[in-house]
Length: 104
Image (cartoon, rainbow, N blue to C red):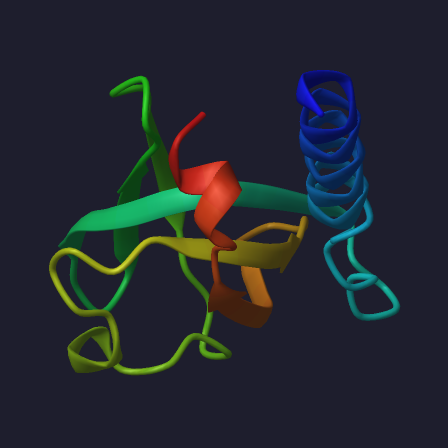
């Protein structure tokens, strides 16, 4: 009986790991030059934005007119940004970070 319970527990554990591993993030929108994953907005104004990741590494960007208003970014919201390079950084899209990437 103990062997059957152990086998069932291992089987359920493998199924759980497979489900987590198969949660691949969606494809970024076409034309994306780069992405910044699991970022928080710590400073924002009309021309510049500063993002910080989970390791407290800050990224300072000069914005163009494609960015949403700074009020769209809540203080503790963790986002994945899809951006394009150029003279200034172009905003393509953003989405909430999946739960397992926040922990990394």
